[in-house]
Length: 372
Image (tube, one colour):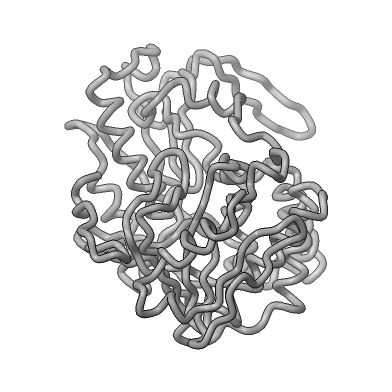
């Protein structure tokens, strides 16, 4: 379910008065929690109504009224769009927001196509799906384009300016994604799981034309170092050549999850655009991808990986794959729950839940969960 979380305007927001640095910092940390939990889809703040206008339609005529508008309590200062399992889960998340006394926040469920009943004819549904795909392929899908929420929601005002300066706007030269020493990549791949598992696993390494087998295995596990293009398509680090994600997939995941990584890599190395890659993955998932096998899971316990510029190697964890579902089905991302839902790309046929662990694959202690 998707919900719009609406922040009502007040005298300060209508006057253009910004909150202090302390509130900005507190809201920034809260927004980061929402992003990590896969809850936040979008967030933005609005200028005062003095910079807005209203258009009234009547009998073919239009009447334009310039702001400001007097009914402050009925105006909106900003909003989030969240994806959670229920209204109660949205309420639980909102209760954690660092708002001060007097703030009034409204939560409204967003209509999905399935909610519109018989009025949505097959023709209208097809047109709706086509438009959504066009938006996604054009890169304009409104998924978390900024962490800014002006007036009460904004964490960092410069986020929009940084968005325009995407650090990885396109694919780097292929050599930057390759590892010069084959044995180093083998060792990094095996570091994803304890030696008792990885030493008998098949190991793949990335070459000029895709992944290739470097070591034959005995136990059905496959260890591999994923590159940045396995990230969601709207991830700003989709082309980050520094990313190295060591993982060891169990036999079920090797048969039903690994093919997605191999196909993405094949499409990337073919030189087509990101939009074309996305279309190719959608077609592959619909027609060629094996059905997700029960019990599919992956070890990601390497202390040597580099998952993105913000978290580095993060912490050791397991990834459990299930047919696409909501976080609430696992109690994921709720206060006190150790389970998290990985942010989902619309093209993903499965949901991936993360379970953090206390030790790296070599047995050394990992940072405690509250260290972040």
